Structures are given as C-alpha cells and as structure tokens.
Length: 105
Image (tube, rainbow, N blue to C red; front, side, top):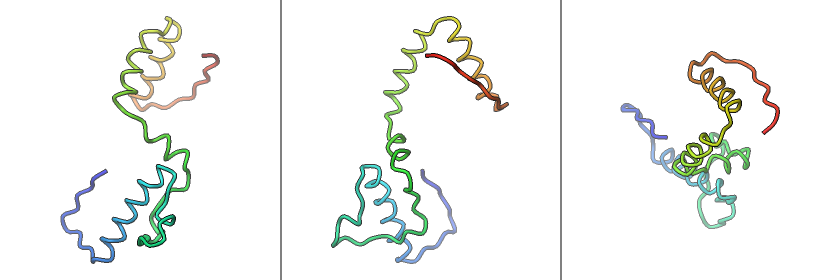
C-alpha cells in the first residue's frame, strides 16, 4: 500500500527503520526474519504487526489465479447454491450486513 503525504518529514533514522520494517514484513511472510541475520541491522518493533503467521501466509494469494478459479467455479454451482451465493453477495455489495448459516458444501 502506498500512502502519499506531501508534508511528511522523516529523519534518516526513521527512514531507515521504516525500510527495515518493510523488509521484515516481507521476510515474515516467508517464515523468516531479520533476527536470523546476525550482521544485518534490525528495525525497532513498535509498529510491526506480524503476530499471526497464518494470516500473513493466507494474504499471499495470486489475485489473477483466484479470479480464474472463481469464474470457473461460479459456473459449477447448482441453482440453490447460486441463489445463496447471490443473496450473500448482495448483502456484501450493499453493505447491509447480516448473519448467514450455510450448511453443506
């Protein structure tokens, strides 16, 4: 994610730390850490949220691959499944909220 803040001024130490934190996030998604590299500088831990490796791993999906699968699988739904899918997607798209209990495949 890129955020542009035109009047942001960072000292060299902050720039270095933020860069190290971004490197640490990338390494963490691959089950590694800068702490494994003894001679490499390490970031401060104040703003790094790498508390859940499973979530980091799950967020690494290939969007185009998943889009292809979605488009293929949608065509395989039976009428009842498609109706339920459409209801849930309607709630999501309208941001109206709701609770659904889906039983089965």
